[in-house]
Image 1 (tube, rainbow, N blue to C red):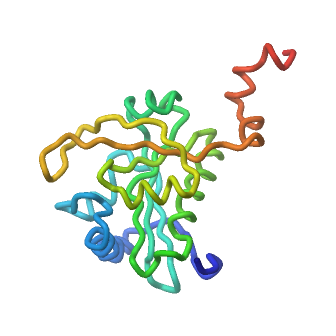
Image 2 (tube, rainbow, N blue to C red):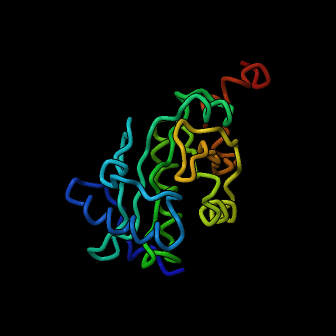
Length: 190
């Protein structure tokens, strides 16, 4: 992996959409990420309820994309947290040129930081057929939180199964969490 200092993460703009569509096509062709090619890629890049989206640039070239959306009740139940305490990492993909450069770590880290600033936990969803993405996130220490059934079908006609993963929080994050403190008030003497 090269030094991520040569990469820039910034909010996605409308002007980025054509470049994102091109990167998406390459990522989908290379390793089925996403598993099924969207019929309308520009609309797919802006999912219902999206709160934010970012791109990663190597120079002027887009090499990665990610958006944040609210969770559904099935994912919240699987994660064991209320919907109001979660944010979902969606539409995460990396160009073949951006691979092995830290892009797939930069984006989820941005989601974790953004979620933490809003007192939310970032959870990444990956369709269960996305074995390359699942393997990467498991190697990065993400923990499986559940596999709810989605409300859409895959190209082969089956209901999508979404594997939810999140980073295991360290003790500092747990101690800083207001939810943790509230749950343990009695043991902390308050």
